[in-house]
Length: 342
Image (cartoon, rainbow, N blue to C red; front, side, top):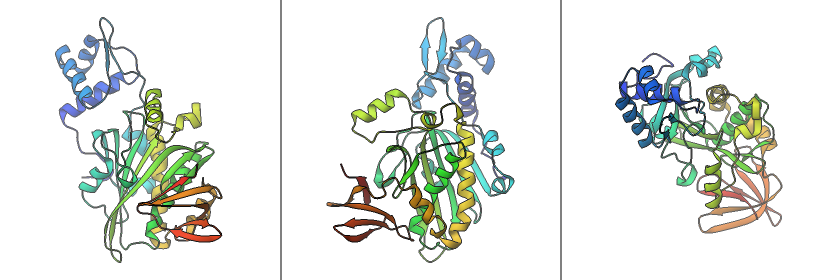
């Protein structure tokens, strides 16, 4: 496969994507018109609509009006993404897959072979039905509502302070958002992006390799772009964390999902070679500036044990620092969870 190209989709996948492209404006389209555009029968259109619904994509149908999506959708576009990248970053792309539906972009990258050292594998999906967050949690991402992306990368040797990679990636994502004018975006140790104390996105790092040798990592990012009101209500009813999205922050300055994904990739692929050589050190001060919980009361949950204290940022290796009754305690990422004390 040549660099930076996706596998050719099957005919059925291609037809589904073409149908979605026709419906993406959120307006009604008659079955007859869709059939002509797709060069299939009206029965064929009905079958394609059924296939989209089976994937979890809501398509409304109204007699004498036709079919439509509940809202306009900004579909991912590979050429738009590539066009937003600088030539050096494009040259670092070994492979791009933009999928209509996948269980997990992290799993997809993990299962499709190792990245060549110095090059990246990228997967994005319109719909992720088994997305994972840290500590086995699910990541809710309705069709077209966010960025679900994973980047595969190979380190020739495990970098120093490897456990802090998610912190450095968080800095890269904030830098990408700030390119478009985003403000008030912060980070919560070790892998959350927040906007005004509400969750904007999350990072999941998966690794295989030896502690003193070559290692393969998959960097997963879930970023809310434009979350439907019904999803926000459902999350609130589940007493989940309140969420924010990029459109809420940037309004009419919001880039397309493809352009924002390109900016994130540009930042990531700029920092990974430096991280390989220097570890977390170049990003420590920047992370501390973005620390959303700095100097606030927090609780650290480690299994059945809960520790209350005041957040004091991170050490040079990314270790969490908590002031507990005047003594500084250190916590490493893993099964540890950090929350604001309420």
